[in-house]
Image 1 (cartoon, rainbow, N blue to C red):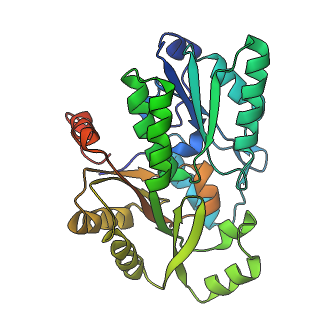
Image 2: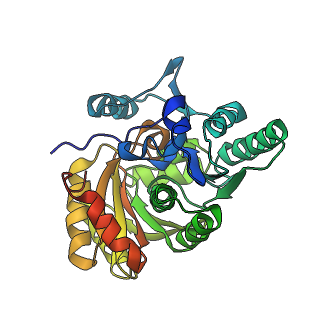
Length: 315
């Protein structure tokens, strides 16, 4: 079954204005927010361009075309959304408090834009409503943190409770993945281009980890089966009963194989497969695969299961 890309949900103003809860949530499109949270989470789009064309891959077919262009040498570029985009997202929230979740400032200007917009809103309204939190992670890791925070917001939790759970999730979320090539992440300046070129010429696929804002290498592999074995090994030590997001960039078959392996070695509370959108795929390149895991609290496990009832599993 084909897995559609995660919708970059940028709800209309009326949607969020009609929802008045004690705490609202805002983040960037790199959080891979699922469509069912479109009316709960304000999502600021991060633009992706190839030349003068802005990429807006909202269907599986458009996403495949995007990755095909990358494989044929296209060079996409991303830029942080300006503070005005975050300010508009904040204005759409009628809640007394707003929690904004960002990726690390050293990776993107998203955190700076979100904080500047928070100050602008405070000057505009004469009160401070926005709390910006650097989650120390991105993509599927940020996605899990956003999901558990959104559930509390939906249930009417106040900011202190949402913030407490969010901070714990930040400490406990783990993300592991492997890239088909280092070329794309080298373009972003995050690794040495020379080392990336050597690695790619040797067809080496490093398996990495990301947690608490720290990245590191856990294995070196050469084949897809080697990637799966290395990622399966990392999952054997996962604590508790995790909510898992398996992610991929134009590698659906590999993602499904990874999901099956994770279910064999983990006591999984819920597992979903998500296709990386262009915001993240620009940096990973096609062929990336991996997962993020967050141990759930006892009271959250049944809620996560209940939310999946009546929906095709793992979509």
